[in-house]
Length: 605
Image (cartoon, rainbow, N blue to C red; front, side):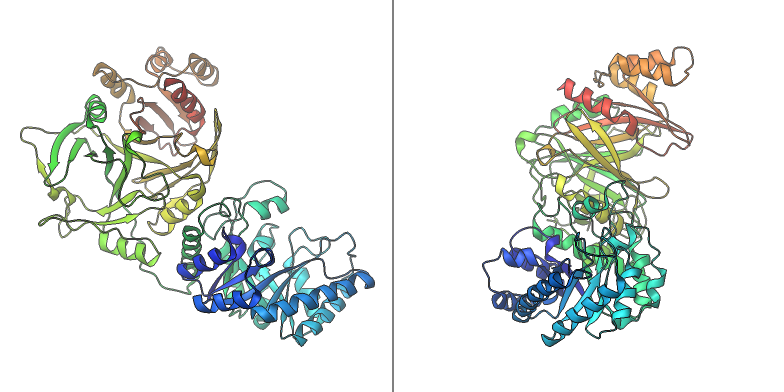
């Protein structure tokens, strides 16, 4: 189906928004009135610009507070409408959005609303314009889609239809199933948006917290199926009011928007994409550093051994158990990093820059990534180098789609030469999870990317109190937990650099691991005594257990499945490690302890 996006969903001038939409592959746009009013371009010039970009103008919006008002007020509304219809003719737009009234002058009279909307449609028809009537979730008297449809049906005018908006329908908990009974030709337009499921005023929710499909908690796909069953054949259009999107760069936001519609169409059977190839584990984490000594000292204290060296690049392989860390001694700014989190300056020091994901079909995973508008990164390969596919995550992190010691697939380890006489300990240590801090304005994009491109499951969002604001986190993972990636974002735009990324190492005995680390000269993050006093009040421990935790700085959490014990190293550059022990099927990441950890890291600087 054709795809469209409302200009209100993007940041920048109208020209910038149109360019971003076209480059992302949209077929059309909804022009938001404020964008036109603020533009130096005439309606004719906007029309020509859209034509040059290959965009149709699918909707002009909005007209407000039109119906069910006193006669003198309605006469003024018709004068206003006449002027807008003339502008639409100059734009080349043939459909206008009319929102249900929120005016205090409006009365609760469906017959009057139908009569006045029919008169509006008469006027619109003279200009070759159609009127799409939409129920605002906070409308004064009309706030549900079925109520709006009853009024349209009563009016019975060929130039009057309804506009369905997934946010207004799903935010009120309305049942979308009866949409399938609306004649498809009377659904003049469809607007799609997702949203989280908070408890807040619906108007504030709508104006500030909408998201693209797949980024929130609404069943947008289920609603779309009912709309398609009704016979709707117009564009799938995104109308997303979001404070973050309106401040972010328009180009990447438009790409993310387009990706959300590709995934949505796949979900409802409208389009075919290469199937997702779910990763089966973490092959390696790559650290880039201008000075290898601090991080290699840390790895040594953690029990890692330097086992191999890349044949042609300044990259070393460090291993312990099933955990592998690459140390790349090169510039901290990565050639493919974008938008902050994956790149940086040499002054930033060590950073987690790339992740290798075990894939049963690396080439298939790369094909899906490309189909979902994800750049497959070019790599300089020397003769004999393994042909690895790598894609760029929204934050610029390089994700290598690779295989380790599997027949019939290129092995990334083949690029490394083993160091003689060195063997890594085989003690059950593995990478439990990777915590990736995101640029503040692309957090939702990252969630959609990892879910749609990599096939990971997204868990509920968690807010964590930080001493300097609120830290937001949402984990993505495989069903079996072989890959776990908590995505986090700081409290404000300037907070991108405040929170380092970290690698969590799973161990069968965190106390023993912590002791070995400190005995080897490593320094664990000190935890305040008040934390342990509180633990003593909340839980019962065996004799000496809590004293051990207090001594080593080990944190403790429980959920319905089991127990989680974990501790943290000091930060090197913008990286630190976590030692974790999961018992009894514990599912989380110790979020309850995050405020204590964050405060301790601030103090330890």
